[in-house]
Every structure is written in C-alpha cells, then in structure tokens.
Length: 268
Ligand SMILES: [Fe+2]
Ligand SMILES: [Fe+2]
Image (cartoon, rainbow, N blue to C red; front, side, top):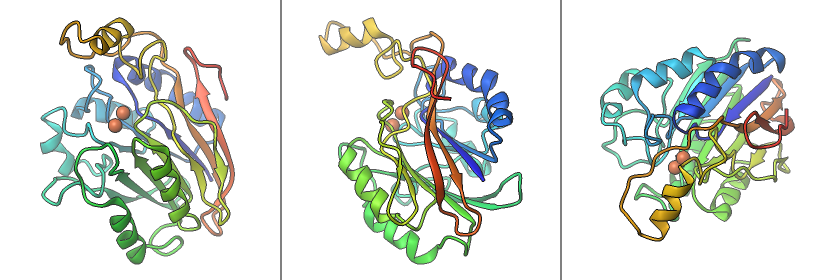
C-alpha cells in the first residue's frame, strides 16, 4: 500500500503543478492514496475555493486537508459541509462547519482514515490538540474502524509536532506536519511503526518566501507598505512524503521524502 502526502499547495503555481504532474506520479510510483494540504491553494495563496477543490480531486488527490487558512475564502464556510473529501482541523472551535476526520475507500478497497489536527502554539485559538487527539484515539483504532490512518498535524513548532508523532506512534500509519512550508529531513519510522516527518514542505514556487513574492515579503518585514501578500508565480516543486505501509497491521514499512520539479533538487 503506497501513500503519498503532499504539503500545503500554494497558489496557481502549486495547483498547476499538481494537475500537470500528479496523474503520472501516481502511475509511476503505484500510489494507492493521495492526501494533500490545500489551505493555500486559492489564487491569492490563502484558503481554497470549491472549483479548486474539485480540480485537485479530479487530478488524483483523494482527500484535502487544511489548517489556519481554511476560512480565508468565504465560500468554503458553505460548501465544506457537502464536500466530504475536504477536511478542516478536528479541533477547531465547536461551531465550525465541516469535519476534521473521515474514512475513505482506497483504489484497492482499503479503508483509509484521514485526520486533520491543528497545533496550539503560535496558532489561531482552537481546542487543546492533545486532549482532542486523546479523545480521538479512545474512540478509533487501527484495523478496527480503518486499515490505515493518515494524520496531518498543522502546526508552527517542531517540538509540538514531534510530541504528537510519538503520541500517535503505533496508532497511525503516518503523522506528518504541515504549515511551515519548509520541508524537513527527519522522515523516519518511530519505534511502534508510525511513519513520521516534522514538515512536508509546500507544493509551490520555492523561489519565494514560503510561497509568497520575495520583494513584497521583504518590504513587509521593513514595513515599507501594507501591500497584501501574493504568491510567487514560478514553477512549483511538489513536496511531501511517500509511505509504504503494511495492510496486515496498518503500519509503515518504508518512508521517503518526496520532491518533484521546480527549484528544489528532485527526490523522486
Ligand atoms: Fe500553509
Ligand atoms: Fe497554515
């Protein structure tokens, strides 16, 4: 069972690269299930629209996760309830529409659980992520409700992500961080069989400041003007993680960084 997880898709360049390259990558690598974080997929680089959601899903993404930018496009608040393949963090405050967890069928007929969580440190106010994760694991188990579990932990700091990785060790197939847009090089299988990577990086133009136009970002740090951020437009690198997992126990056999196209050196 081969699972591909792609980090935050940023703006048009990220979406174009997913559409152009993902179908071939799925074929080449015999990938059975694809999860991608889409919280920056809109043209403005924040949020996601219904059209973009549908385009990404028809390019081969099976489930789209999000994070702190989930409501940045107003329409998402309405359409998320009818789009079961678009998740928002489970621990958003209780009146939020949509869901943070779903179970989906893979091409091979396995049941895949996908869980979207958001960190508490330096992030928007949301429910305590460790308490919500504990409640989740009290109700759901590998090989019980689902054959595999993929967790997107959307967070700012490395220690919170790593602690959550160990908390899920043995209970998830993969726990991967998103949100920083910078890929880390610490992919490994933890003691009890969960594949872990602190951050998947982004699917966007790396000739940028985390996906946004360089000059404008520097100016904003100098506070020269209050121009809004806008995404860089060069060719995107697709960045994420590939996991080979064992259907017998739902745990990981192999984990590899995945980088394709654009500014970064390919790890393909
Ligand atoms: Fe992001
Ligand atoms: Fe984020």
